[in-house]
Image (cartoon, rainbow, N blue to C red; front, side):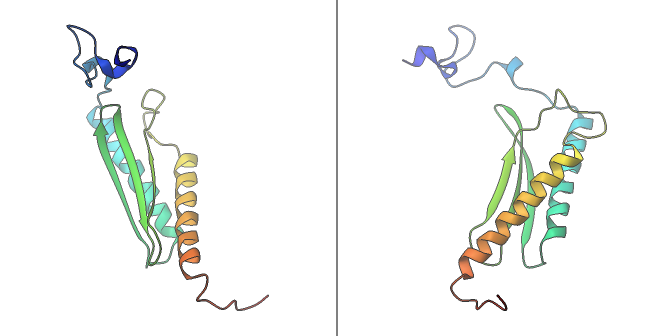
Length: 131
């Protein structure tokens, strides 16, 4: 059954569980710099939506499929939330890898999810101020 998966490898070319070197995209220095800048912008935008008690962090790493971007939020109570994705480097413009609309969408979603985690964690202990 392994012979039908891309993880079985190609005899004489690629070992099992390995990818061909041509399949893994290489980032130029400029692309790396732009990617780190764009991810920092997502984290900064997320911080704008949340009070200071929330911890926001970001990370850019490289996996077998290329660069992986993660932005995470640790609320004061409740479970942490994160957004991870692989940016499309082929369609990236020269001045940004992640568009402004995509950055705002990720930041708003993370902020809303983090706020929901707090709400769910304290829902039984807080009396509503009005109806």
